[in-house]
Amino acid sequence: MSPIPFFVIFYLSLFIATLIEAFRFSTIVMHIYYSNIKHAAEEVQKKEDTEQKLMELLVRIEAKMVGTTDPPAPDSKEYMESLRKKLDENMKDESKQGKN
Image (cartoon, rainbow, N blue to C red; front, side, top):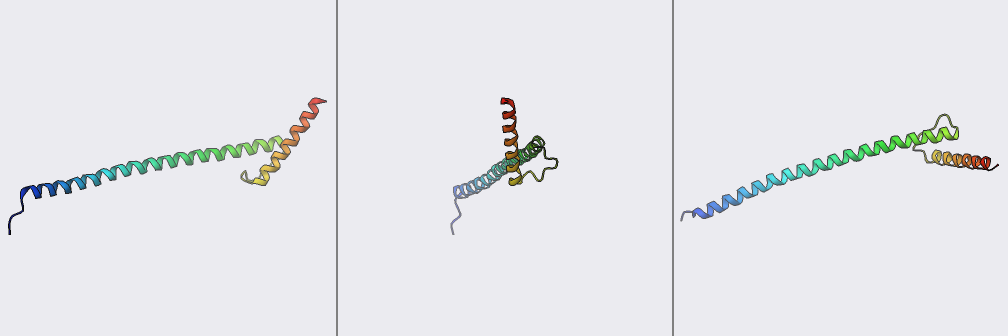
């Protein structure tokens, strides 16, 4: 059996080292990518929380303008529609009084 030439061992070890480094690099890149996704998801959640708080505040303001004392859940569509109708009626009444 003849000995394995040096260049075969050299190139084989170089190939294996390249695969190991490529794997390490890809894990680093994936870690950065997924941490960016996690950060973006946290930002979206913060914006949704802020939007929910603003909607609750809007419902309270509309309820005060209409004259309702205790508003139900702000995500109730029927409640929002009834508030808008009452608000529209109040605006029409005010515009009629302003014309007279």
